[in-house]
Image 1: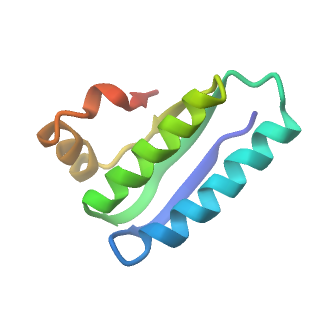
Image 2: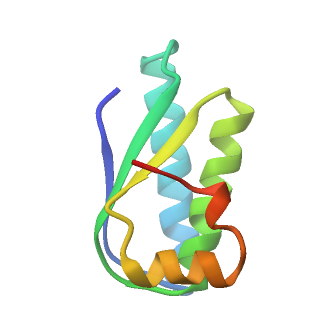
Length: 96
């Protein structure tokens, strides 16, 4: 399955729309690749993040696990990684 990507800001005001689109894209990707075991999501294009971005990633991670798929986060911005560490959830996010 090809890599997916996030770009631009992912903050409180945008998180609900981004999550909705990402959920739909994840469902479609899994529908078209039913044997997939992992999905790579490139975060290197994110320009601004806050704790809402972390919520989006954790929600998608949970949904992937429910479907037996590991989401792997590539190019996680340092600010987002720091938020994950401060929140003690960095071990829940699988990086590539």
